Length: 107
Image: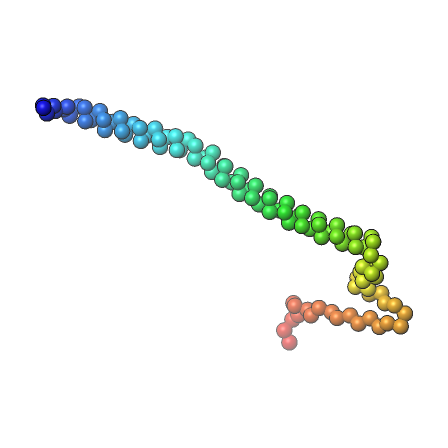
C-alpha cells in the first residue's frame, strides 16, 4: 500500500465546499424564515378563531335552549317576568336586593 498525500489544495477545496454548503443552507433558512413566521402567526390565528367559534357555538346553544324554554314553557316565562320585571302574583310581596356599591367613597 501506498500513502498518497493529496496535498493542501485538495483539503482546501473540501473545506471550501463544506463552507459553501453551510452558506447555502443559511441562505435557504434566511430566505424561508419570514414564511415560517407567517405560518406560525396564521396557526395561532386559526387556534384563536377556533376557540371563538366554539364559545359562540356554546352561547348559541344556550340561547336556543332559553328561547325554546320561553316559547314552550309557561313557567319559564313566569320566572323571567318575576326576575326581570319584578312582577308578582296578587297577594305576593316582592323583595329586591341591590348589589353593594363597589366604588363607594371611603368614609
